Image (cartoon, rainbow, N blue to C red; front, top):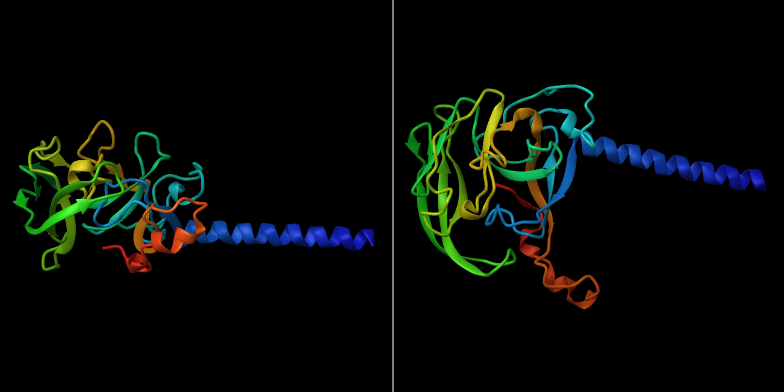
Length: 251
């Protein structure tokens, strides 16, 4: 009987270890879940969104693995993001904090913001006013302006990447910047909530992002809650879920 019990415990431990190794493998090479804690990517991503990030999109670096062990440098099977991708990366100043922003500039690009308008390689990026947008769930309730923005493709003949951005006004601190030239091996990222985002425009805080720091590309939202239900208010859970956002692609 004692041997049977011992064997049963051993099999249970093996099962847990195998399950853990499989989960780590999937997280490392395929998909990793992330949640959105702040409003820097509104209206694309909302506070309380949970999404999957594809780890294979840009190849693999040490940051593809849990705890970012320094096993090797650079990227394996690496490729650059497309301009307009929403990507997760490790903050360059500490190589551990996860950030999620939209890739605006690729190596060699010149990026600038003038009076709220984004310029890529000296050309103004087209934007169209959509109308007022009410920001909720990220501090005080605000009514701002929503624009449809058309990011130019990286290659001639490609199609513009269309996404939506928010602006409180066109004279906020990051609405008039110097021209940034993106170094080789780096990308430039910005939040879609342009006046409420700490991103590559803040050179001392975020700055240019080494390609090695890219974790993956945001693919789709698998769950979303608006924060109106406390954990013990079981009866309110269904009303707090943003059902329309479930399984929606991140664009």
